[in-house]
Image 1 (cartoon, helix red, strand yellow):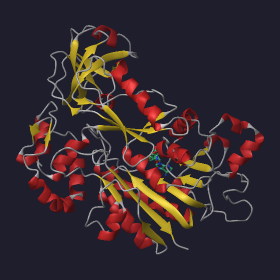
Image 2 (cartoon, rainbow, N blue to C red; image 1 turned 180 degrees about the vertical axis):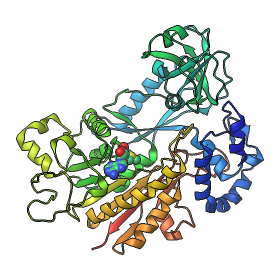
Image 3 (cartoon, helix red, strand yellow; image 1 turned 120 degrees about the vertical axis):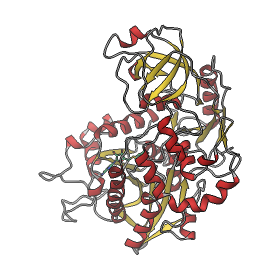
Image 4 (cartoon, rainbow, N blue to C red; image 1 turned 90 degrees about the vertical axis):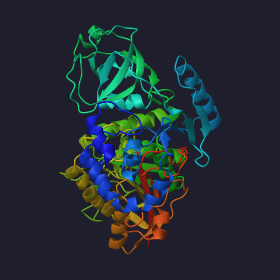
Amino acid sequence: MDVLENSSSKDQFIPGNFNPLLQEVSEFINKSLKHVNHNYQGQVSKIQGELSLNQQKFAETDLNILGKTLTILSLPPRFTTVRVNVLKITLRKALALIEEHLRHQYIGKTSPLPLVYPHHLLPDLLIIESSGIQGVQPATKEVIVGRMCGSAVLRGAEVFAPGVVGASPDLHAGDRVAVFADLDDACLRGCKHFSGRKMFLGNGIVNQSRKDLFKTSKPTGLAVSVKEPIFDAPSFGSCHSELLFLQNLPSVLCSHILNPDKHAQVLDMCAAPGGKTTHIATLMYNTGQVIAIDKSQNKLNQIRLTAQKLGLTNIKAFKYDSTKLISPIGLDGTACNIGQRKICLPNNIFSESNTYKISSKLNSVGMDQEYNSCAPPYKPSSFRWILLDAPCSALGQRPQIQTKTNMKELQSFPIIQHKLLENAVELLQPGGKLVYSTCTIVPEENENMVKWLLDKYANVELIETTPKLGKPGLPNCGLNEEECGKVQRFGPFPCNNSGNWSVDEDTIGFFISAFRKLS
Ligand SMILES: C[S@@+](CC[C@H](N)C(=O)[O-])C[C@H]1O[C@@H](n2cnc3c(N)ncnc32)[C@H](O)[C@@H]1O
């Protein structure tokens, strides 16, 4: 645990030997992964002294799986992955667009122009390979930003004025400045000399003076243009958002694994902000129907916007609690059944106020009826394809330069995942396919969840997930070797001893499993 102990004494990020994740969370991951440590021991000793980030050797004490995992989690993947809207543009043309965008973006940057190429297996994915960690020394003057802004900077963004919380007293436009993230939300707005825990993100050129940054409570515009980031990553903003969609590789894989038929009816139980929903809708060539459920209205609005941008009209989105998706009424004419017209009852959860219309066309009466006919809840065995991309502890997301998640919160996720899975199994037709995924590396939400499902339902079988890009499931977490081989896991992180991780290894932490319901 030296990695963590070191962290409290450091006030500045040095890639490769520091991760500021909360100690409590680190202990939880450590507990969850304890059975893994043993299995990784052989590989860990092999890479001792060899694994290097930023050409810096890892200290012997850092070479434990937890230390490496936490270090990697604090940085973004070196590969940025872009899903191409193949309904509107070919991969080749999209590649040319991205190259052109990058050529402009990298003018004046110290890092080399990234490579762009198609993924070796996923037909709609382009890879942007950047040079990753850069050797950069902090400039003397500094700007302090919040954690959210800091994570965005690590993924290639510039610093905008609302993200700035502190700055050196004599800061003027045109100054070269070091950008730091405030790890504990401890920096008061307008602070001149911040002495709390902070992480160095890179150097840039100031666009607004200190006076301009803090003269109003709602500053706007570019604050710092980041020229020498500690981690080189391309930025896209809203560039060609009707053609290109930034999406992590395992998330793209997830929809390919579900692989519904054209004209199918698919249920996406936890859909917002809609990355996978819109991908599934695209894989179905904008035919059939993707029913997207989420409990958050704000996030549902994001699905609508993304669908509109991408030109997709086969998505119907509803605000609903997916732990209560099964119709409580039955087939007495008032019950809900996909494809039948829904009759709204007094006090029925379905109402104008809690559903969301995906397209303005739906305002016409006829379309409203069509829309209503697929509103939740549903009778059992309604769907042949279901995606449950569950709410989870998200401990695979990168970069996580700090997390506020506490132990109690972490332990709450398996409870809701059980309820969601129960609904999913009930709604699945015999012969139907369910994909369960999370963006966490914690076995309690992954392998253990699969084991729980298989034990509970004799009529559900675990099936192969293809295409195969991830690693097998973790051993000693309830699944036998054959079962481990069927699921796909991304993280805890690579154990090849060169440090040259491939695009399929250097990803966010993720887990994918697939099931079929027997008749
Ligand atoms: C991991 S995110 C889904 C990401 C999404 N599939 C995508 O690819 O963009 C989990 C989502 O589950 C939603 N959620 C959490 N509890 C829910 C519930 N009981 N019913 C429906 N949605 C829920 C959250 O609002 C969140 O948007």
